[in-house]
Length: 321
Image (tube, rainbow, N blue to C red; front, side, top):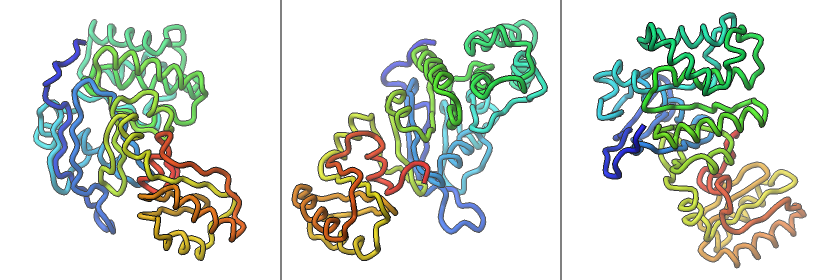
């Protein structure tokens, strides 16, 4: 695969995307706008219920939006879903495998579902087995595989038809470190070969190490967008992140909110994030409040030093909350 020209049109273009589920109290997606360039390794991060799964379903033509437009490779997803689906490889979080079939049979089945047959199908099955390093296990039933081997097969099923866009929804959840590293190496190789990848994960270190572009989403809106260095630079100054050993009483939360040095504050049971224009003064004031309430600190940091702290500062929650 050749790398696209620098001025190439975005592979994904999303405009004013809104999705309201029947009976929902708020939109799952709320006027979301996003463009993803060809050849990107794009990380989509957000807490549970942020709208990631809804966005992926609409991108793949599996769900109709309430309002807005989504174009993949210049094609409107709703106008020509079949063409878009042929260009996308989806690797879902839940394993999409037939356990009583072998790896070879699984790949052949999904290849035929994508319109492959004959010599071309056999070629792609062999190529995918090689990518997953499952050649020696190709004719074993999948229900005899370990969790890591199943994840490998789940990955290459999404590659059977050589898609231009690979979408992965938490592809490394619940697997051992060796299998996770194997999947990371495979994705890096695919990306270096020119494939565009859209990646969701609950592991911040994965996003930091793999993705060259990241969007943080919550309540159906993009809160921040950029590379990891850009996000850290923007959110470094004025951010105070604290973790405590016990729950924060409501009275202490009110005291912290009322500090004149505090611009905004997000509070969880045992942590909080404060934004301040005078962070040094805010640090002194808040530590006095905590000391007076006899609340022991586990950690206290000034400035977003990693992607998890940026995420916490923007959403007020951890990814698994």
